[in-house]
Each structure stands twice: as C-alpha cells, then as structure tokens.
Length: 221
Image (cartoon, rainbow, N blue to C red; front, top):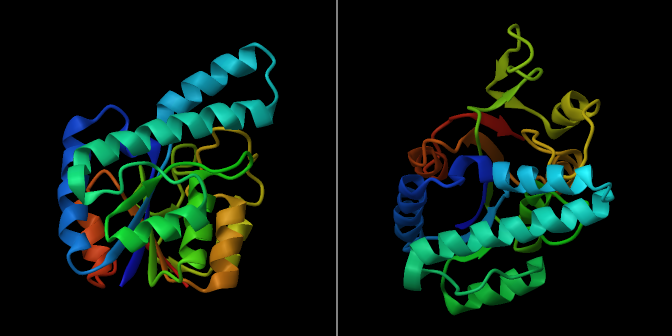
C-alpha cells in the first residue's frame, strides 16, 4: 500500500513525546507500506505569519514564512525517524516520488505559496497514486461547521468531497489558515478519487487503525 499522511503542525508543535510516537508508528508501517508524510507549520507558523502581517507583509511573503516552518517541522520528524527516513525534506512532489525509491520514509513540508500542507499532501497522493490519504488533525473529524464556534455542529462519519467543498466554501483562506481541509485539497481529493480519512492526529494510533481499514474520524469518498 502507498500511504500519504498529512500531520497538522498543531498536532506535533513542540511535543517530543508525540513526535516519538509518530516515529515509532511510521517505522512499523514502513515494513509493509510505502510511506510519505507531509508536516504542517502549526502555531509556530501562525505566530511568525502574524508578526509578518504586523509589518504589512503580503500573503505570498507570509506563505513563504509558513513553508519554512513546515520544513523545520519536517526535519524534526526526520530526526525522530533516524535512518528510517530520507534525510532531507523534498521540496516538490516529484522530488518526493524520487526519494521514495531509496526505500525510506519520505517527509516533506510545504512547497509553494498558496498551497497549504493539506493541499500538498493531496497533490502528492495523486502524484504517487496513493491507496489512501490520511489527514491527522487537531479535531476528531469533519463537522457540519466549526465546532469551536458552533455548539450545534455535528460530526460527519462519511461525506463526499463535493459536500466538503460546500462546508468550507465560505471560509477565508489566507496564510496560516486553520481548516480541516482547504478548498484546493478538497478539489484534488474530489478529482483523484483517492480514499481519504480525516482523524484525530493527537492520537497517533488512529493512523494505524485507518490503514487497517477501521472506520474512524471522517471518511471521504
């Protein structure tokens, strides 16, 4: 199986224990699967982006700052994985595909301004013909609306990419946006048809459950 895992930066920000647990799980998965990981920037990226905006930096510049942070986070996971990982974060999906030929876990961050790491992961999944795309976030799935703002939000166990696009259509997308999946990622998932699971990345073991076919989080198809 070819697995692409997107880990939100908020899931691993400054959490050594969780990084260690992800590294252990990914090393185990590597024995039976080809594994790609895309790491987000999280609160650290948002802090830097917020400071840049205070200096009137434009969104493309802010995106570049966020990308730099995602690549630092990718290097932290590479350090945790040790020799099981390809030693540097590829900067394009094509480079990631080539890096996988070495038989190691490939970990990358962002690529170009305007693409969140969820979009990067979706494009990567399409590029490498992944069997599954897993989005490990700081929530337990996708809701009808933001559960942090709306107490009546309902978690969805399954939905279509088209329905997801409807849910996120009204959200503003800027550098550092914090959405379950962004519009570009949702549209890539829709056109590729790759099975996608959005789950609670704060529980790394859920990734194994999803790979093993257990219904968990929100399933997109």
